[in-house]
Length: 138
Image 1 (tube, helix red, strand yellow):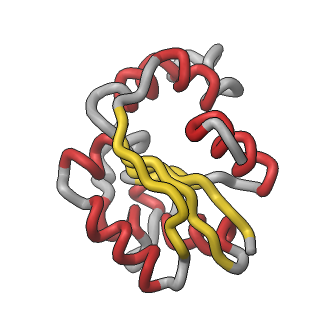
Image 2 (cartoon, one colour):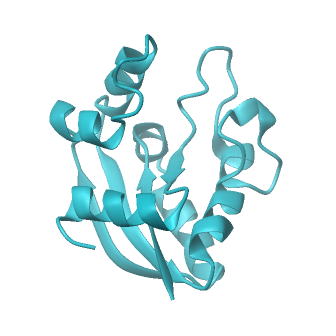
């Protein structure tokens, strides 16, 4: 069984979408191994987004991710990394298809593409790294 890391971002928490997102995970047959609501710190974000910290748009990501609590977790299941990414939909909500989490729930307003409800690891390596970073183990 494969593991992946996920975040329900501040807009998903603020808009009371936690239950609907988790319901989709469970209906897909994924097992939630760990689940936690927390407030993100600057240091944790800088480590999570280490490849983006020097980019000009990083301060807007930081402000958004610190704008409220997030829900983090670990999913387990067959091919969970790619399946979860397909369920999330395209990163930019305006490109996300109906039936995906972002397509159904994210706002596609101009300049608001970072407010896209969820995050998921993109590879087994990033899943292991992100699980260790956020939960202290893999």
